[in-house]
Image 1 (spheres, rainbow over the protein chains, first blue to last red):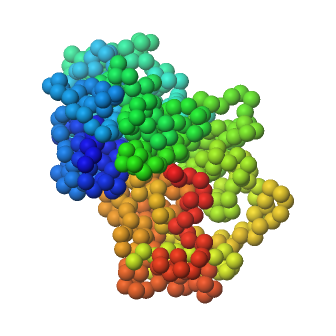
Image 2 (cartoon, rainbow over the protein chains, first blue to last red):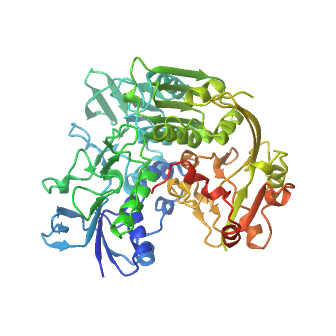
Image 3 (cartoon, rainbow over the protein chains, first blue to last red):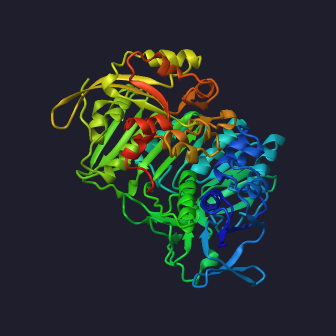
Length: 425
Length: 173
């Protein structure tokens, strides 16, 4: 009987365990978790705060007990790995003991970044990543004690916290250190459009604001002071400036890392029998061919599947890793597909806008590089598929159903042509 | 017993009877929703200058390895182990559009009235009770059919909608 260990208990960990169990009914599968909860989805926290889902829905695979029973797992709650000896395939625990296994999946996820800036530990300053973060914000919002809010970071989480505030009629300001909103995904023109639309919904937006410190005001409330001296007052401050991969325990272990654990298409690390999956790893981005962390729920699930299947002896590859960021907030949707930073001055720029869609996209003669769209939610999967196909088969063009769907959904022929197809009708 | 939708474009004239069947079966209110199934009769000019006359009927393909299932952050979508159809319970749907971003066929739709995802479920209840899906029942030309997995394999057909995703080159190997 084989013994496998999974370090972490999130989406990728769950899928890895499930993939192993589907292929090996006898194996011992140990889960080492830094908490006592089942796998929860950080993306859902703001939806719970908004009241869109009950607390239980944060756990889409069920409770820890249900999963433990269903997949016959040896779950070690509040027992995170403190180190790893990849040569021996051994995990070192907090008490110094070591456990060796036949294979290991590293699936430790990521945590919200709280940099060492003065004032981030003040009451009223919070982050949004864990189920507990969500419970605390929901209680505060429902108690009516929050009268104004400042959200630092126009990130995918930050914009959802803004939505929570607006839904609770709390005046809200969004600040970001970058030159424009959604900086890592949006063209400047798209971001300016999104900012204008957000401001029209009553949210103040200020970019190029780098936080220096937060101070408590004498009469109550908080003041976030920027490096340029600008001051933003509110009685609560959300810090949503990004995430950091939970890989500190691997330092000096020999596991190859960049910001996260480096893996190949099989989710293998540089050590045989050691795999990684989810937000803690960097898989190959098929657009650039370089490792990149693309921390979205679907990727974590797929990567967990692939890691688990390979560990159980069934070869499988994860091969559709592309940047795709979707923000849906306040009845508004923005998607970016591809790498905005790969675009060059000499590339072809496509722009289109009507009452339904806003599109801005860039391509070279060889390949589409990045597509920004607003208002296109129903067609996002079709366009994303076209983008992936254009990378894998640059000469293939669009398939007929895709052209038909885009035409039906009101996309102009010029966009279809830009994507690689020619159409008349 | 798993079921498979088959579509033969050579028999389709985009008459839209399948759409009407779908709308009727699912009580779709066109003032608020769009039909789960759509038909197309488009002229597509191809890169070599030829024109392709497309007659299509498209809905959820009930992919064997459906990407929408893992994409749903709340776990609303799953496979029915009996029929093999991709079904859903949208009670906890947050309307985040993640499933739409994952679907290469544009199958998930959003109902404006409650902001929740809806999609073709293969007429799961009908099929479990020995009936054909409404769209198949309405198709006069045999372009849309729904057969059991055994019947499909015995027929030697290669027109399974559930296998279309494999042809897109998107899937894990």
